[in-house]
Length: 307
Length: 307
Image (tube, each protein chain N blue to C red):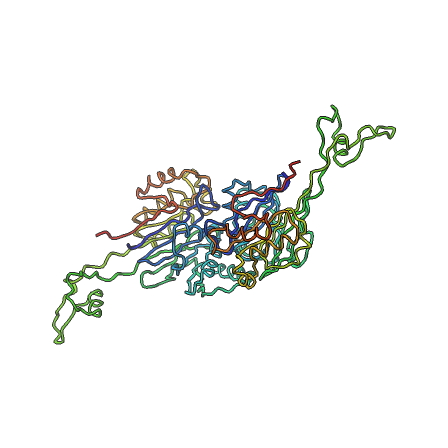
């Protein structure tokens, strides 16, 4: 599959109604990325049998406790379980200071390197790139510095048609075909056309994670046409004033952003503890943007090319 | 009842085998005291339907994450749920710095006062006193500064025999009887003997909480004759070397301390994640101190005068 988002927590402020605080696990081509890490996230990862040492990149949107208080415990458990591999941690500058202070008082030095990458929450910048994705910050409008993250898959290689590959065909030539190059003989004649031996690349997807924000259309150009948008929906429409005062969004506001940005689907979360039942929130969002879904713990949302 | 200890978590280092990290709730005459607060303690309190706003005193033994990483989330939830009542927080000096830094970056000011009482982990001192108990520090021998806590009930009042109290008897006189005073008439003659109208006070209990420590007999005079001792038993006897190196104790070491200190019962906890089954640890401790019990999550251990 291309992108899988597993919901580890979707409640705001305090855990309630058996809903944990914000955290999501992204799987891209088998690689794991963690977004936000509320208290108890390591328990959720355990519950869903996620191999935590395979997480190499963690992104923290902001320093309200419900989005990061689980990070210290998770990093400590990685250490205690013998991690040696470096880990990239992206978040607001204060995060490093908080972690460093806690390590100082516990007189602990991790056995692995935490590469901390301070994030400029006011800029839309490329902050991470690996073989599979590019990650960009999305400046959000919250009470404290806060950035969302846009995960954009990198262009993929063409797909080999196995039946078309003759025996003894070299790996080097396979790589050429995957890159869309033809194979020539010594005299410069084409002997294998890449279009005959490969299928076009699978399409690429974009996932935008907007954790805590008030309604703000300035994010639209950044998230435009994303295949999936997570946008917080802390409140229902009746509490629009409260949403504005606390720098949060309503269901309809999130759905309006989704519609204006022409995204493929909307994932709703960061629900206020006042809502035990979440269906009414979904109906409100769907009245504006039909392809709206609740981020329910344990559920997977998959973007994939089934062609 | 006199003293009830509810186990909220009993695992060491990282949560495992469905065991959370260290935390215990003490109920004394209906008043709630929290000892240590590993990650997820607020979820455990919720699970066991503990009214968190009735906790007015929290004691943190040391600054290893498995003993305190849940404190920030718990204090935040108390704030979000509208707490106004001050809260006493006892712990190593660094704890205030960690909390203050986290509040700074979340740009949050609690609606209630947290009275922080830095604890001298090297001294055996009275650190808290209220109508019901006195709490003393127990210097422990751990890798970083660490103190246990001795909870000693204060002497109780005599118990009124309701049938013996005539109608219209004044509250003032009842208080006198409870305090062991007789009631005189205007001429100085005894009209009511307190021994005839009251029963002796209920007995008082002592509970000693020794979170993380290597084997160290210097705590014995402090915990001598305690009715219940919680003493960590991270390892079984075969890992005695590892216990010493990591400043932890084995089952038999804890049981030896219990025996030498002549306590009423031993509560074992802080189990290494290597142990999925805990019964073997219990049998080892019981071979030295028969009244040894496992601190299993959700269980209550009660000290009460049933006479």
